[in-house]
Length: 178
Image 1 (cartoon, helix red, strand yellow):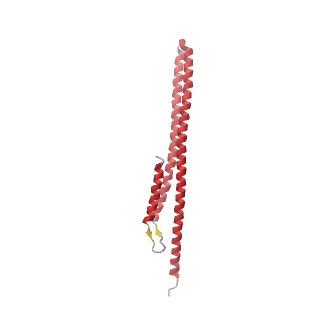
Image 2 (tube, helix red, strand yellow):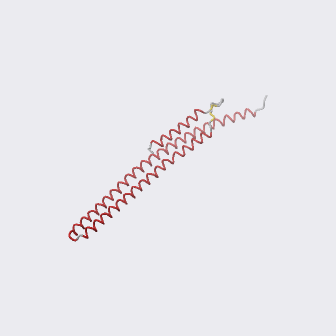
Image 3 (cartoon, one colour):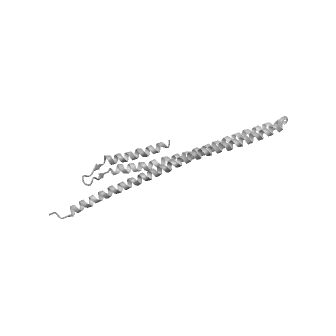
């Protein structure tokens, strides 16, 4: 999933929350809203579920890094085995024993250098992916925290207004009638 995917999902969920507010009925007194509690809680749950996608993506990057490293080790092992086989074959030929040993040694050093290079490249690629995913996750968590804080503050305000309206209504009902 691209870094834009989770961000777009968050924006869609924010749009759905906004639409819920816009579709809510206004109370005749005080201009407060009646919000569908089930839909609001459902949207909040969806926001929570959107976070693990980034965590899964980070885990996939770690697994991909490990797979790259494992593949590099396997490739290095195969190269070393081929180099060792070549060395053993060359040693058997007495006429070129010395040249074979030098060639096998060079192959072995080349194979080890190539294996180190492959592992270094795999580590660099995995680190870059992990860093990008961590930054994306951090930014999305900050955005979610800010959004959740704003929504809870808004909900606190709405509930405070609703409580005030209910208390005033109770006072009116409890007054003796003349």
